[in-house]
Amino acid sequence: MNTRMRRAAVAVAATAMAVSLAACGSAKESGDKADSSSSSSAKKGDDLKIGLLLPENATARYEKFDKPIIEKKIGELTGGKAEVVYSNAKQDATLQAQQVETMITNKVDALIIDAVDSKSIANSVQKAKDAGIPVVAFDRLAEGPIDAYTSFDNEEVGRVQGKALLEALGDNASKGKIVMMNGAITDPNAALFKKGAKSVLDGKVTVGKEYDTKEWKPENANANMEAAITALGKDKIVGVYSANDGMAGGIITALKASGLKTLPPVTGQDAELAGVQRIVSGEQFMSVYKPYSPEGEAAATMAVSLAKGEKIAASVATSTVDSATTKGVPTYLVPVVSLTKDNIKDTVIEDGVYTVAEICAGQYASACATLGLK
Image 1 (cartoon, rainbow, N blue to C red):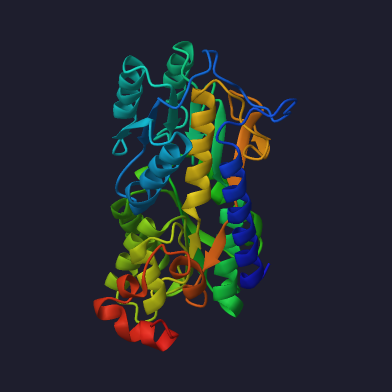
Image 2 (image 1 turned 180 degrees about the horizontal axis):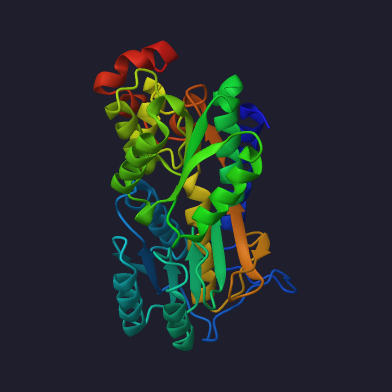
């Protein structure tokens, strides 16, 4: 799918989501087959308390985009009457389990969780369920008896990254080795990104070194990349699959420190500002742009519906997925876009994620001018 087609697909999805979300704040379609779990409690009004637990604050998206999007949508759906109780686990699974306990004690009406560790959170999800609190898994498919799930098509993310890397490599794909810098094994999305990428890359490149990067931390990716350079030789590395932008930053720092004058193409994900700026300057080849509004709005709508004891509308939960512990979880998956220097203007700028001034500040002004970003 070319950039224009991908862009159109996201626009259609976002528009459809906006319409469906507006229509289903109190979704109670008779005979609705979508079906979802609903809270066992009696139906409630708009005076709700909804818990929001995000996994970490090192990645910019959670605090800058996800939290305000979810809070705003919950406010819209409840006439400003609902309270959002927020905590960030700062990449600590034990702390997140304690935060769930606090949410249960505070008697929230529904809980949105982006799990630090998708497996270890299962016990906490069960405790919430036992307390009559429905749980929406956000961005990562948590284990345990969750009631709904929203994320991106994570295998497609990996395929988009793999295709972009092959495009960047061209004839060099067979002339050296690539390094694969996958995400943390505690994040089920990381396995899906890897699976999608390998479905594209297998048989077309030689993987010299591959790492599952602890906690997604840039400094861990940097150390892994330094080890790969030592093992393979800097001139033998033709490309790097990086599962996200934060790790790409650590990878690129290691590549530059090795003395390479021309950097190999490096992938990314999340369209973080620093990642977009590296794309502008030519240090990073691409990122995956994931429109956060449809995902956050879906989570908010699911949580409000469940908190009120209502079913989730079929227009929101458009599919189902199976986790390791729960079958047929009502799900909404958001499409993604490959972000390169050729479509920065048509994606993150047009959608208002960043302004030209933010992207093109300081040392990036000249590169922006070359790309026609004004």
